[in-house]
Length: 509
Image (tube, rainbow, N blue to C red; front, side, top):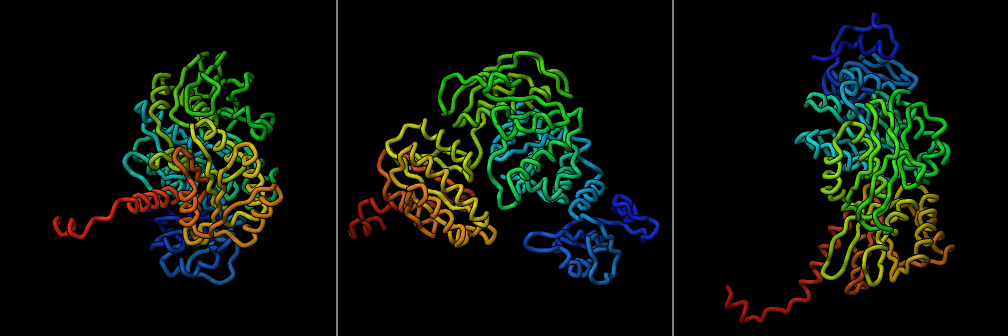
């Protein structure tokens, strides 16, 4: 069973009468996934152009092809479109029966905080007995099924397939991270969003956007997908997010620490560590799902950092709009233990280690502010450079790290390019290294650099003393950092054990 090719062609504005009445049994833009009866959509990419794989797709059994250009004759119908990425999104949505129309999809976008906010909201919903689907950086999850995540926002064909699976499982809610790349490349074009959340817009992604202004405009494109009768929750404290307020069509509810926010965060104590805060709504707020009553809701978090209070406030606000009871929101936030590599804290003997996927100036701010609240003697910082993200990004990051070295004393600053620990798409180029270290030099900060991650972490252990804090920072290049550091620690402890005497070894055999 499948969807007739003429029906899919009509979605693209093609004359269905000119095409054979054959069924399409699957849609993909990956020629390696093509099976007999599939429709292959040739999508141009920054590294590979799908048009080069049309022949392979046909050999694998593709029943039709969608492309922007046709350089060679194909043995199957080839439908030409001006934008194959958008065509893929529209075709996939139609093929799977527009599953998002039967779901309440909450799209969460922002430079930082998407993953934590999404996981917080998902946990609240599960705590309230409302199992939801989760689509994001860490994984795709629904019911008992978990799929690895290759992109923050999956490709349109994969995304619609997951949404269809969630609909089939009887879920009502889907919490989804929406990346700027997912917006720019049209992956979310066929999704009907019920709520939008904007956590912040700060300097990042200069490798994929021509300017910061274009980056902001891309975020706005997602928010413009929400109809005027839908609701956007927006972080009023963030300048980039706030700049979009006059331009949004949907209903807007703001949250933040500023007293002018519709939903206010009132910390129980002035600290950047984990703790308690009050979520306060001074007047009833209207959303498309009903009215949020005035309330003062005390909330407790296990998470470090005031930025996580903002993430929790966003998650709580959406949950309230969905009709979740306040007591379930309190329980959900209080029992949420965190997300992998988001300010994860663990111990190695008398050393404290914090592992964070910080990758831009704003996330450095959040990480350093959070660790400054933790008791420690000295601070050892290990940073993995960002690979294939442009020299400009690396220079900006260097300047941001140097800024924090002047506010918090680094007893050691160690860097790595994680050679051999990242894939080809995340390798640090010579130009990126040069830009990073020239930025450090300009700011007067020096670093001990090690090409290999293991050597960098061994150096950190070598200079750390009892009571010190080791801060692991970086994206893909630091993903295995915790495991490597723990192995090094275990080896170090084993080496400190007294050697067994030969006669003792014989006696035990």
